[in-house]
Image (cartoon, rainbow, N blue to C red; front, side, top):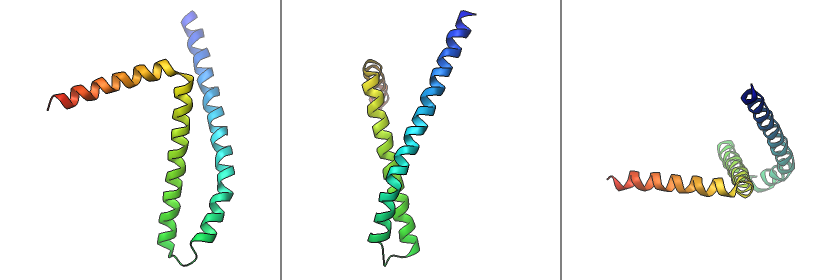
Length: 101
């Protein structure tokens, strides 16, 4: 019974973190969207539709990668010990996998 209470509290905390993360991400995209629109309008006057689409996709990929790196930095700063231990375990696994060849 006590485990159910702890588990439900943990799930509620995770849901709240996810909601906060989604709100933060939507705020960032609203701030970046006008700046991206300015760049798209000014820097691509003579390009074809396919090139514009490709540039837009690449810009979106760059934004997603930037968000991922920012979130990773935040997670590492919030949980430094777990991050170091995780990196150590991954390094050991990769070393063992490469050492078998």
